Length: 256
Image (cartoon, rainbow, N blue to C red; front, side, top):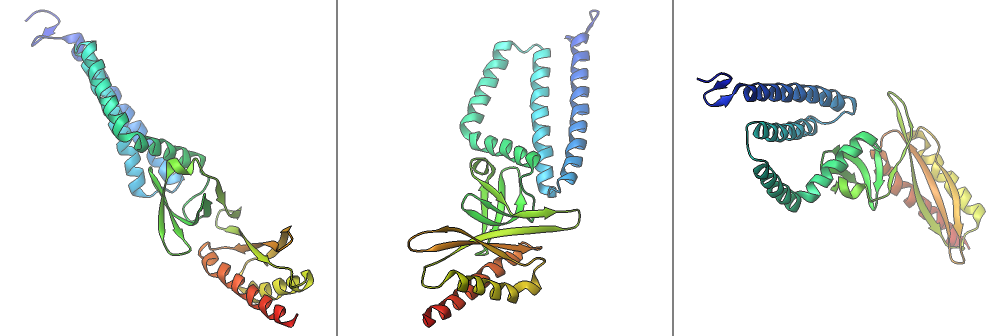
């Protein structure tokens, strides 16, 4: 056996491979520990946290294999060819998946909403049930679970109805519009709102309010501000308030 050569393999090559493997193991443990703390801090579900860890492990494995192949004597043109083929296949088959993954990381970092918040994402409105790497699941007022891709979320307007957030307390200010024609006076409409708000006040942490936002030739539109502690209350209170307001409005119209 020649000096510096073991079974036809240069000892320096073996040493470099050991260093690369050791560095990869250390990096994997560092990332795993960081991601575990990050998942606890943002209250990710276990499945989502595991997907994050698995993804970074695969990335580290790919980089490690390429580094070992390069140190082990694999010709650069082979490495480039394999990388190009793999990259083209990955880009062709998984562009949206990668985009969703990156968008998911951005959402988890920017934190525009969390699980349990009442949000409006584009035209989708409801309570956030789950935030994964690829999709955000929202429970709508129709009791439907809508999965919105994280890539689409970045292209849409996001409204989080959280009004005040404390350590053990969140207050949501939900707004919705109610329109009337001009058959009933402004004073009567004000009386209708006051009467209806008094009826539901005992179930709310703060009295609802309203504001005239626009008035045209055919209608007046008011925005109602509804304050709740539990987002699911919006599903019940919004139609209840709207129904009560229109019932009282119909009564007033018949008096005209």
